Length: 156
Figure 1 (spheres, rainbow, N blue to C red):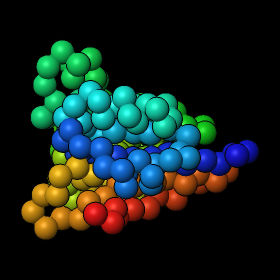
Figure 2: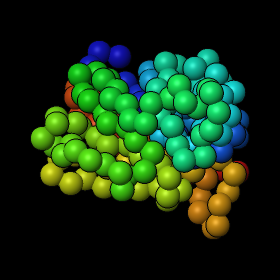
Figure 3: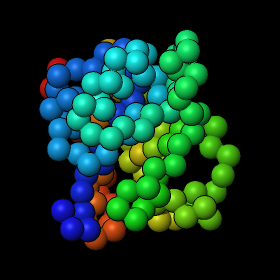
């Protein structure tokens, strides 16, 4: 895709990678996991679909999890995306740093907000259902440098 593509965003899988999530992410150029992976097998399955970047969440423990960074910068189609698990721990100005988007998880509440031209995206939780929240992930469609994020509710 000249100048375009798809970035798949997933978070809070807590060791469960649902087949519906795999289908929704299929065809994406890059995948980003915003923490609380829960099991390294989840990352192996995601890497079978596309290059995968992941950060460590508060439930990620053990040697495999310690290898995951706390924050990550992902460059996709000329745009920079900043990734961390808990948005309350954001310690930089994304606009001043040149980020097009900030991706986080932790709250299990899917949301897309735009502030000062920067998207703040929480794909929600794609793992075990928590409370009455939907099971979701997010996609960013990129066309000629423009980002079009959307929340995808998984039919589970």
